[in-house]
Image (cartoon, rainbow, N blue to C red; front, top):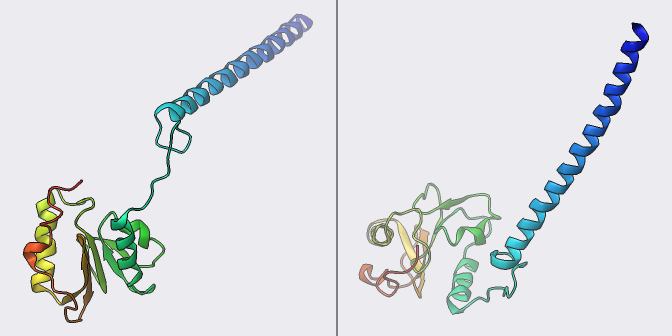
Length: 173
């Protein structure tokens, strides 16, 4: 009885190892299929440099002007910025997404960019007009829909509330 039992266990072990090898081979095949499908998708319709015909975006005049505006902000200053400008300021210790201002010394806004986190473009324009009209922030840069405000300084640039979103009306979300 004991020897028969040992033989049965040895056979089960051998069969079990074979099953494990087969399962492992199927896992490898499945992994190759998933990676291949993912790579094929990226080559055909992806948004990465792997896509056929991919071209790196080139900065236009508005982008260069935005960078010039952001360069006016001192490196240590707390900033509240429009969603599309935050990545350019991400290395700072205090950056807030506009309309959250908190203790920001500077507010950077791009009315031609995304209006997130607002639901409507007009909500963004209304909030910007309120800032320009009735706060302690003075405008130090205004061009091509870009606006830079600094706390507790007089206006260096004349910004009429009507002009804030007029040239950028209806731009992207």
